[in-house]
Length: 254
Image (cartoon, rainbow, N blue to C red; front, side, top):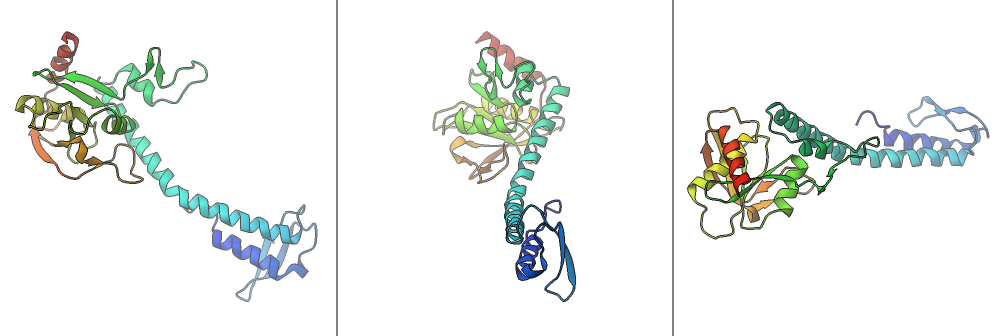
């Protein structure tokens, strides 16, 4: 906020110009006028403008500064969210878990190559699919923005939503439309995927919150990937990296 001009100071300069119009010569590049505290202040002017227009210029700048200050918190949140998304992707790249399409999805479009977030066969899905031992599909979000897309556009209200508690990581969805609780083994495997796709993947035991998708909501102006749960249960799992290959093999077999 300190980098933006002070709107109040700009308005005061406009007020001082109007209060001392007789001291402002047409075509002047600056003027020194008494301020409202008994001292004097030097004000830089635009010689091409009239005194009244110079005052209006300060009011316009004050308005722009106010709008910029109002916008800054949102821009900061967006930047922090983007940083978290890229940090998460870097962790997954270093762990050998990120695909080329996933990396392309978060990179800006390149004018030279013409490649952006759209692959040769169309837009990449915001999730990576796996299949549990019981044959249920599990969708794992590919990043912060992709997490939002998965949670709110690529699953049904009764699907099971999972996320490692108090840890940055992927949204995970176990496709399940029944009102009954999913089979314990399938639920545990989905929870393990949530743990493996989080920053807690190297922990011995990871708490994973799970609930129905309909109990997950997006707070207004929340960063990408940030959600709130109206109700949830917690399952503790020991991350098992070998599960990734096993569940991907089942995908290939399906």
